[in-house]
Image (cartoon, rainbow, N blue to C red):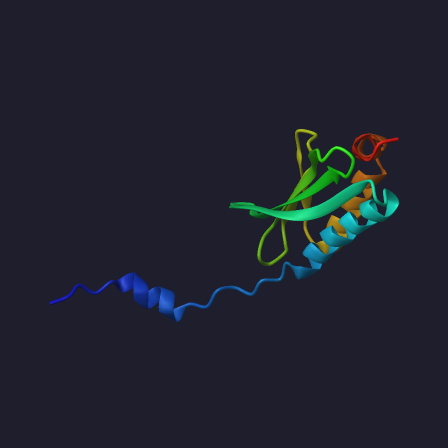
Length: 127
């Protein structure tokens, strides 16, 4: 007589939650597109999927110098499946809370406007 696993029944009855990350992912892609447009032909910028964490799925915004091939991670975004309670790691020893997509957009704009962010990008793009 075979054993019955009661957990299989639980898994078969439950539906995974809807994935509502796409608007936030589109925003990260727009962020990357703006960097590529500004530093046309000198910088490649892309969103890279990282590890799933207890904060949500990790996405890294990575720039790459077209001249040297060196890469640099500008930021990490942690986006839960419901796209609420997102967090940004901007490498300033804090995690920035972004409760929704408009807050994420404002945080990304503020980060990109910082002279030190633009200096970092410029260093990879060449002068």
